[in-house]
Length: 299
Image (cartoon, rainbow, N blue to C red; front, side):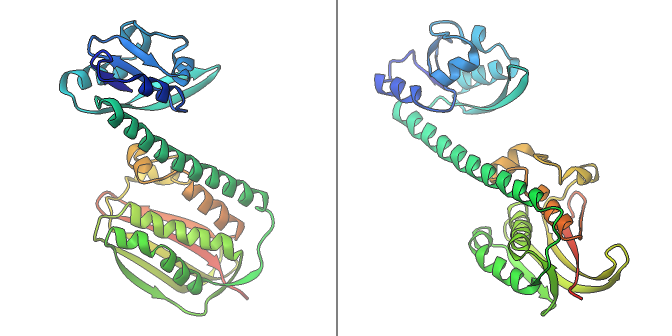
């Protein structure tokens, strides 16, 4: 959403540009009237409101307040817009900007790139979850060296770890073999390490341990535990049972900002369930997060 001085600094090229954007866009002048909107936005608003006061088109208090605040202060705002498509509820994340002309164009392109990346990750995760569900009744039996998978995952996530200057504390029992699907277990390990990095403090320590834990009656076999802990803000207890639900986020804005799709832990749970293992998550505010997976060892 852009705000402008009645189009004086906005070229016809900008209007043509927003018309081809897949994201809904509306341009509002300082006189509070709508200068232009693109086709995607017109499907949301129901009609073309050009020349009308923005309040008559947008109607929702949170969005109206964000626009007014941006007009008065010049500061960019973020809010949400609620809509219904047939019988389905939709929630749009809205950015309100006062940036003019080609600056706005560059901003829109940046938003589009981020949204495209997010959608790609979302589609990949949905496909991954679908594949796991399709094989849920087939217990994997290939011998998998968990320590080797952890070493491989640490190499691949090294650039992400370096970005936040995280310190690693790694203790692995070598030679532990579990019956499994190496690709899926590699996905689990990579997800847990990336989550620990994303939601931990810059410069914090990520602790990774892999150890034999002896007989596990629930698994009807000896077990091995892989634990990943970060020193982040932690999570309140009432959130913990829901963390593996699809699209559940403790902090919606922070998760999106850090690239989360809301499906990672759901995929992890399905994979561990397929391997007849257990997933445990322990946390408290200010105490970081500990994620532990327990798998039966190869007999």
